Image (tube, rainbow, N blue to C red; front, side, top):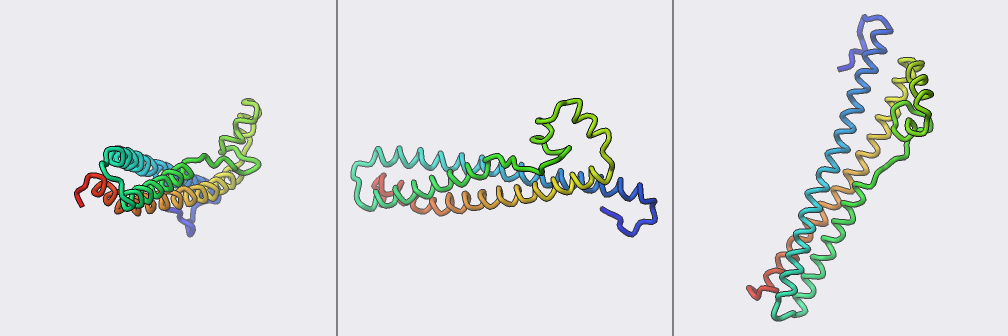
Length: 173
């Protein structure tokens, strides 16, 4: 961890802070990736639920108002879950106006200009850039996890009406 009370020279402390900030940035990127992995679970579950619902509804001999209500409710909640999952994976590409780390700012520079800017950057400038990236990626991670949570809640709320719809469609009630 960061040793703020260190007796080390200032240059070593700056290097330590820069390494620590790089570690924090990598952790934030890991949280972003974790949110996107969870989207796969919700999406797979949602598509499977919709497929099962469509098959059961299509095969139902009798379609009572209860079948329509349960099927509609389940389908609505699963679709909400899928929309929330899609919102979680939408790329967030707004970044700082100047950065040697953010891919959007790197890509618009000529490769030689970028190489020169990276070579000439001081540790303090790199630390500040890294700190700005940490903050922005923390915001992105929070936003993605909020959408994943909404997707999971909607999908799980859709399970009871989904089960009811399956039971009613198969005349097991």
